[in-house]
Length: 368
Ligand code: G6P
Image (cartoon, rainbow, N blue to C red; front, side):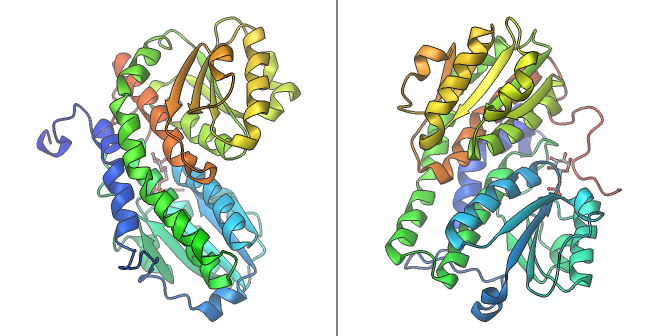
């Protein structure tokens, strides 16, 4: 077991460090010599894709959060409406599925009972089903019409890290591929985006090299009973994943809020010293986030920002800032999740929790 941890104390940290290579592998294996995306495992033809009128993304847990980012990417680049649903809810909600629906099932293990049931239900209703999974030959892969394998390698720690970032890469690639088929993206823009995705690998490495800063911040959270993550737009999706990561291994009460909803109730929870983690990576929303941070700070919150380099006024309003290298806003979820994974890891291990096998949780939930 020690050998497979590759010198790290825990699988989770090893897997956090596997991310540059998981991102690279997921992308590079599907780029041809002209850097065009080739999705061999996907048999969906141009004609079939053109008939797709709506997309459903279903998943559980962390994979669901990847789906939320996936929706954003597919709608923005390929101009198809996308609905994201939690697999256990989807099944019982009489979804509008017909022969013009594409259902994307996201599952690291490919064995989650509710996700598998959603695949079966969608097929029964005539949908085309595409799986994004990390396990070759898994049940979800076998039962879907098309498969996009994330090449993250085996993920052992219960809290998902590298599978999530690889799922995001899969969604970016699918969205670009669909956009090319539908002609909703110019050739140069497509090429530029592929290059920008390639640059995420060194950017993740850079964040990992600054992990000590995150450890110092983790030390300040050990006594807190609750912590809140805030974000807007894609940062709200990242906030949900960050909050899940922190709660599942630190056992701290953690929630994510859309920052714009603060005034509609959440702000009542803010009291002296409560940690509020603000994710700020979206240029057009940064100013609004800064003002939300001021609001919580004025009520005594201890504000930690996970922010893209160069956001104006961030150092004035935050008590601590974790800076992220610059990437286009669409791809920032890949970068903003890394410090939140590290933070969750450090809070958990500093509390002497069993970080790889948190209480009451299973790696794969194969019963409903
Ligand atoms: C469990 C795991 C999570 C995972 C979720 C979905 O809750 O602890 O880490 O995100 O299942 O698993 P899947 O294998 O379908 O992605």
